[in-house]
Length: 329
Image (cartoon, rainbow, N blue to C red; front, side, top):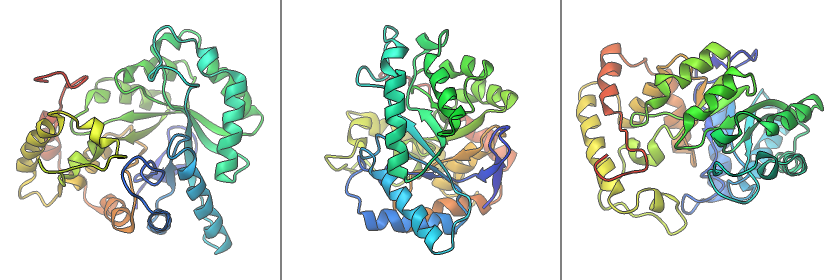
């Protein structure tokens, strides 16, 4: 496993992190036994960064992570594991509309109560990184929630403070980075979604902001394992993500990527992760991991050679400006 600086914050983290959404739920059937084994295996392989959220099984993911960290400490396998979690806004539009009020969706009372729940679920006295799970550009001129979080930081309840970008306006966090409001950003960046390379990632590097990359496999299609016959369980959110003709359109583009990888020695998921890691601003990428085999496959990518420059440049052609999946995009 290779390690990278987490922005300017004085520590290195594993460049392959553990995305813990699936172990909480919403990705089809998942046993706690598989989840616990996956977490232990990833940490044994040198993973030191775990990303979770309140919404991942209504705290189920956080509780499993807390259990594993306690088990490892009791077994003398403590080590330094950095855990990032997320607080959603109070109920309302997702993402927040331009007319939502920051002090209503992320009020001080709400944030304090939510942070207390995150700490209880993790069994921790301090959260390494607390991220707001979504945002709206409308709040940039008066980012009240971050003032509250900085106070919680001064009280010793939080380590770092970050934000998980709203899917369709990721650049809304650029002003927050330049204003010094956030210590980290979590962004969608993959072979299809390359817009962050235009400005966001470079600004993060300039400002010393840690960068966590999510959705590196575009919810699984960039692993190359889906086909036109793929069906998702009723409780698997990917059934909505790939609804209508979306899966077929994505598969057609995956086949073009597969052609570019022929003879390179990289599998589709390996290339997907290495493409993300090629950008120097990236601190860690957090593929979803739900069993031991996935832990081994994803963590093992760190030890592979970097993508040759020529291949990296070739793969840039697969950027897909699909916005909201408009027809023909």
